[in-house]
Image (tube, rainbow, N blue to C red; front, side, top):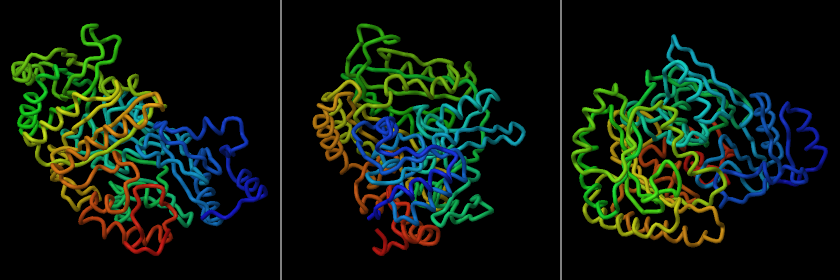
Length: 467
């Protein structure tokens, strides 16, 4: 438990920071405590808007010395709202927002408060990209530390497979650099182990020469969903690395660029991304288009940042979200039948199911080479109930839970941590599998008192000694 704070100690913290400290009596407190998922309504004791590493060190020391719960916030997109907590000191990295591209070295260094839109903007000017997710407002820190799945996974691997180093503030307030050559045990743990080990204030990534891609959504009528899924499971398993496509159930938004006859229709689709030159990409898509004529075909050449931000307008901050997820090895006919059943019952326009392929380059990294354990799974599957209206919270939650319960028996067991809400220790252990014990030992070395526990928590040494 946090001990009571007196105003003198809060005033002292304010003198140590260049950034602003926001308290419950400040007029912008309610705005500052919002996160992407509006279903999360937490009331922290203080929110520190850190502008540099010195601010982060001061906050970590203050939190430890005052026995405060610490929450670390990057982009605030986390499914379970784990960038914020009741009665906590929130270390908000948002102002630590900078990018530095080194085109000769083929790297980019990114501040801990950046979003992927910031990174895409900086790197695209040099005709290069870092593999990330599918929404550009997502924070770099959260997505990276959890693994990083998106449009370029099959071509370039997970985001963590392209992480070269990280700057980290530890629980004792010390600062270190983690890479394959320095503090390599910590570097191993950061690549998939989430925010368990410290506050990452900067990331350096390897860049790929990816500028324009050939991509976008192809949508099919729900009556074709079973056929499309059966075709897709075979096709993507054997596709070249240059081609990525994730499967979705969705409701077509009622506005441009979608044709009026499809507005608010429940459909299935594949969102493609091909990194080949346009002429070669069009050849590759001939058998895809020949398989079954899509009801809508928006696939074509576009800048990589345009694909990465395509869904931003559909999913702005402030919607209600309920998430459940699994890794999947095989997509059986029985599982497909269950998917189609729940897809036909999509409860709201924003609710959806995504299946992201994690084969290709991502699968050629060893299970123990990083903390991310499910290298042999074929997909990361997530179902989300989403709606702007809090009155629909129960409706979207029930659909998601029922959908998950129906499909979980067909799963590989664990789930991608970035798709998990607060689901308990057993679920975290299932997610890390054989890597869990090593992670617990590294946690005991770098955070022995479990100061950083507002996350998918790995307890130090695997014991019950810490809160």
